[in-house]
Image (tube, rainbow, N blue to C red; front, top):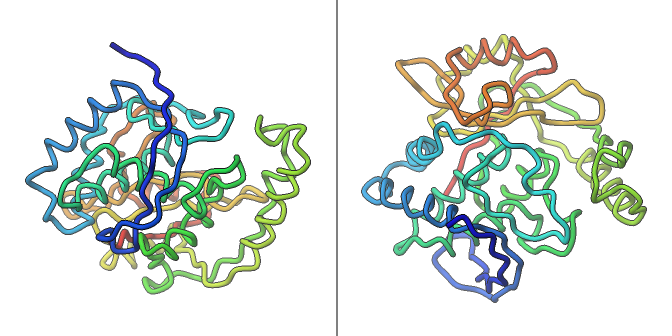
Length: 288
C-alpha cells in the first residue's frame, strides 16, 4: 500500500570515514512504503557489487533508477525536513539519492536508515535541519560543503579547467519564486548572506563545452557533471553523472525534457554544446 508516513528518525552522525558513530541527531523524514521497497531492490542488486570502485558503483546505483519519472519540487514542504522520495526525481535529488545509496552500500551492513543518514549529510550544510536555508540550494555550495565532509572533490581545475568566478544572487532577488522565502525577510537575508559568502570563494573552475573532449581522458565513470549556467545570479542549472559507454562520455541524468531518468544518446560534449544556457561543466568526484 502506498502510505504516507511522517516519522521522527534518530539519525546517527557519521564520521568522515563512515566507520565511527558520533553524536546522535534528530531530524524529520518523510517517505513511503514504496521508497523502502525501492531501496530494498537496489540493495539486493548492488549487494555483490559493493566492492567495485566507487565511480563504477555510482553508475550501477544510477541504473537502479532508470526510467523513474522526472518530477520537480518534491522537496518543497513545510516545515523543512528530510524528504526521501526514490519514486520521483529531479536532476539534483537524483544525484543526491544515487550518491547516498552508493555510500550506504559501502557499509558493512547497509540499511535504509544508513541511506537516510547519508542523504541528510549530503543535502544540508552541517547535516542538520533547522529551516529552508540549511539546505544546499546552490550546487557550488553543495560541492564546497561536501568536499569539507570528505564525500567529494572538485577535480575540474586539475583536469585543465579555466578559473570560474561566481556572483550569486538569484534566490534573494527572486524570493517570490520560492514559497519558503516569499514573505520571509529573515530567510531572504540569510540567503543573501550565503550568496555573498559563496561568491567570495576562490578555486572554482569550468571546462568550456568545446574543451570537454580534450579533458576526457581524466574524466572518470561516475563523476558528477555540473552544467554551469550563464543565467545571471545562478551557478549550475543541471547535474548528472558521467557514464563511459563504448569509449564515449555520456550523461546519466533525470531529464526534464525526457521526463525520466535516462542515458542521453548524445556524447557529453554535444549535450553541453547544445544547451543554450550552458557555459561549461564542472567535474566532481565521489571520494568515499
